[in-house]
Structures are given as structure tokens and as C-alpha cells.
Amino acid sequence: MLDKKGFLFTVTIFLILTYILLSISVWVKSVETSEKSFADFYKQSTIELAIEQITPQKMGNVSDLIMNRALSRLNTHAVDYEVRVGPVGNESQNIEKAMFELAANGSAKQNYFIGAGGPISQEENSSFRSWVNNLNASLLAIGVYVSDFSIYDFHFVQDDIDLINYSFKIKLGLKDLTNTSSVSRTYTINNQLSITGLVDPALLRETKANSHLGDPKAVYRMFFFNKTNYLTYSDIKVNKTSTSVRGGQGWFYGYLATAGTSTYDHIPDANTVSPELRPFYILTGTYSEITSLPHEVYEGFGGYILTNTPGNPSNCTASGTTYKNENDTFNPVEYAPPSCTIEYRTSFDVISTSKPFIVSKNFNPGSADLCPLFDGSNESRRCALFITDYTESEVASHPEYKLSNTYTGVYSVELIRDFVMCGYYTHNPQAPSYFQRLLSNSYSRNSTEFGIETFVIGIYANDTAAYDTNSRLDRQLFNNSLVAYKVRGLPGCKNLASCSDSPQTGIFAVSPDVQAWYDLGDITCDHGAGCD
Figure 1 (tube, rainbow, N blue to C red):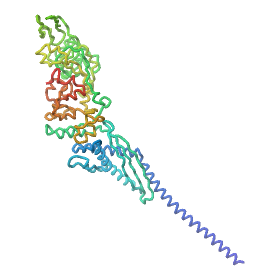
Figure 2: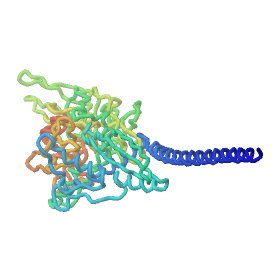
Figure 3: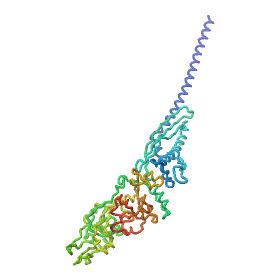
Figure 4: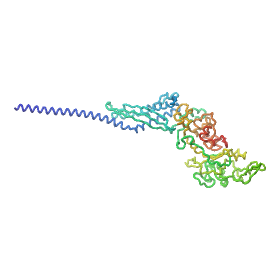
């Protein structure tokens, strides 16, 4: 009986131990499985956490930096190595291909360009390849690496006169180092690049190539736009502000000052203009207001606009025609009987002047446009240009010329002056686009939709021997076959003395086509009082 009990006890203990061992084995297996699952879960979580940090916005920001740098490098390279023109219907094909390679790898092949040394060499840290390498180095520290990276559906097209649109897709894949966990994302990139601030490659290339004609002055003109005021060339007009004109002599552009106490903003009266600045001012007012000032004051001004109608003290009649003698004006004329021959009055009360002036009784100084005062004060004045039919010397020899009114007028030229002096570009369908300025023979091309042009003037663009007498439109600068006319009131041609000289800025001139496009016909030097 005892032996049976002992046997049963032994069996029971064995069964219990077997169960315990089995339970321990199952638990160990369970722990091992849990640990493996947790490790896999940890790896997957790490990869997903890593890729979640590369948000679409961050990828967009990276793309913007890389694309801007790629465009800057392509623009610089195209100065010496023009981009090769693509096939008919897609002339900018090689621009797109070069941009893709620059963005993807930081270099571009030679066959996209013209000229020896054409390829764009590798540059560190300016491409997606460099970005991926840097990203990979960071990810390896947490046991992850970039397993897949590709750029596809790449497009690079001009979107506006100053904007380029780029779009593409990026596939990014990550894996852990054991290759057991992976994740991938696709990013859709679509953004714009502005060409503002880039140097015009066509103009720089052209001036470098032609520097042998004169001083080697390459023109580094950056693209700037003012689409609010100068969206297209037709926005830039010259306005005739006074049509009621009764003769005068010469022409002059300058700041305005009043003979009497000024009631206009931005217009000083004569006595407040310092003597050294008076030659740059036009004195406005009636004849009596001007001549009532001390002689040394009014004589110091560069020109005059008389705002009164000349007096008519007497008449002369011959052959049934009555002629009116003048007073209350500069250089008054009279008609000597019996044939009423015109001559200048020479009585003691006559004040004559050899300076340019115009008689315009309806001229309102306060309606003249604002213009910058070039003295470092950042103040403004009001400016005007007046033109008569004949120069001072011609009028002195021929009194009848003073009364001629064929081309006379007072003009506002501030729009064209601002556009020219600030170096803006504007749209003209006859001009090459930005993309075409990267290509060979840029100035033989035009783009109806995105063509842009500018004027070249200034100390940095005063290559007298090469192009000083040519049209200052950038695409006509070296076209010696075009006739070019100086333009009164524009840089280098503010008065007869400067326009007939060789000012540091060069002299602004335009061809007949430009004259028509920019409505400059009234103020060019091919008619009216001459410029030489």
C-alpha cells in the first residue's frame, strides 16, 4: 500500500514538473517571439519616424535651394558657353536637360553647350545627390539608410517674363541595416524661380565679345522688373503737358523752381535754390515775376518757362496782313514798316537772353511729375522738358524762328527716365525671352509671350568707340546699320551742352523702331531744336 502511494506521489510530482518545464519553455518561446516582434516593430518605427521628418514642405524647401543654385550656375555658364538650341518646336530642350543634371548631380554634360570647356563641373553640396549623401550619413547613426532615390517627370518651363516653373516627382526609400524593414514616399514638387537679380547672360556675352571695338567694358546688367508700372513697353509713354505754346528758343530738361513764392509741393522758389544748383533748374513764372528778381538770381537758372501771354503794344500792317509787336517777354520781336520786316526790339526796356526758354501760358508747375534730387538727400522735385523748333543761335540769326510752333511743347519724361536709369526690363514681343538669352544668337530670337528688353546707359556702359552712337536698346546696341537719334531729356542729353559732348554716362539714343514703340517721337533730336 505504501509502495503504491509512493508511486502515485512520484508520478504526480513528475507530471507537475513536466507541466512547469513545459510552461517555462512556452514562456521562453513567447518571450523570444515578443522580443523579435518588438525589435522588428522598433526598426519599422525608427524608419517611419525618420521619413516622417522629411515632410513635403521640407522637401520643397530643399528643392527650392537646389534649383536656385542650379539656375545661377547655368546662367553664369551660359555667358561664355551658350546653351545649344534644341529641335524645332522645343528650342529650350537643352536648358531643361542641363537643369535636370545640375539639380540631380551637380554637373551638366558638354553636349548641352557650345564651345570647348562646355561642361559644368561637379560642385559639392548643391545637388540632390549631395543632399542624399548627407542624409544617408545621418541616418546610418540610427541604423537606417537610403535604399532608393529617384527624380522623374522633370519639367522646367518659363511661366512669366520673370518667372520659371519647375515640377518633378521624387521617390525616397529607407531601409534598416538588416534589410528587414522598409518604407518609401513619393513627393510632388511644383514651384517657381525668379530670374530677378541674375546677370543678363546675353548682354554680358555680347559686350564681352565686342569689347575689342573700344574699352573692354563688359556690362553686368542684372534683371530687375517693375511690373506694376512697366509690365510692357506700351506702358512707358512720354506725355505732353502743355500744348498752348507761343514760341521760344532751344530746349532744356531740369528741376522746376518758381519766380514768386512757391505754393507747390516739391517746387522751391528761386531765392531758395543755391547758386551752384541753379543751372540745373528751369525758372517758371510770368515775365514780370522773373525779371523782378535780381539779375544775378534769374540769370543763374538754366532755362525759363514764361507763363504769360506776351503783350501787344502795337501792330504793323502790310499787304492786308496785321503783325503784332511784342513786349513782356524775352527777346521780343517787332515789325518794321512799311513792309513789316521782323526784327528784335532794341529799346532800353528790353531784356534779352541767350538761354533756352519757352512761352506756355497754361503751364502748371504743380502738375509736373516728381523726379529724384540727386544730391544724396532722398528728396524729390518736379521736373519738365521743354522743346522749341530752333536752337538759341538759330533764333538769334532769324527772329521769325522764335515764333515757330511746329514741334514745341512741354513734356513729362519721368516714366522713361525712371525705367532707363533704374535698369528695368519690360515685355516686348519683338525681344528675346530669358530662356532665349541663354541660347546661342540670343538677339536674333524673339518670344511673343515672354520677350524682354532693357536700355543700356551709365558710366559702366560708356564704350564710346564701340556703341556710343548706336541705339541704346540692349538688342540693338551693336547693330551699326541702324540709324539712332539722341533723345532730349534722357541721360547724357539733358541740355544742348551735354548732348553735344561726351558725358560719362554715354548719350541715350534710339532707332526709329524704338522711337515708335516707346512714343519718343516728340523728344528725339531728329526734329525741332537740334542736339549737336
